[in-house]
Amino acid sequence: MVTSKQGRRALKRAKLARMVYLAERDDFDTNKAIQQELKRLRSETAVTKSGRKGLTIQVIEDSKIAFEGNKRAVAEFCGLSKYEVTCRVKTGTKDNKGRYFVLIKNKLEENKND
Image 1 (cartoon, rainbow, N blue to C red):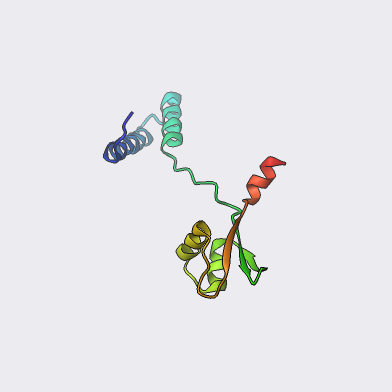
Image 2 (cartoon, rainbow, N blue to C red):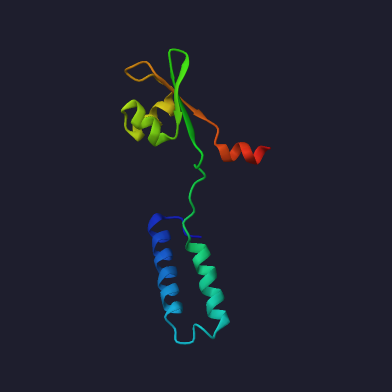
């Protein structure tokens, strides 16, 4: 198992080079073993996304919910950057207008629990 970042990158480059080699072979259409190996390499090198879909943030101002939406919508509503919204959610501090930002459970997580 490769633990260093450089080693992981080199391993990924080697896998991608192997994928190109397999895809460009003359007998790719007829050789099932090559197709299966290419499929295996694709699944190993695929980049998985974190499960952040359905993220909802509430903007609380004067003990009332002023706005609710995803990070981009909240940032546009409040005139802040998305990074600043993330920092405010993590730390729980007020912004200069006295608003709190609260993270609501992901909608997908709620569906999984039902």
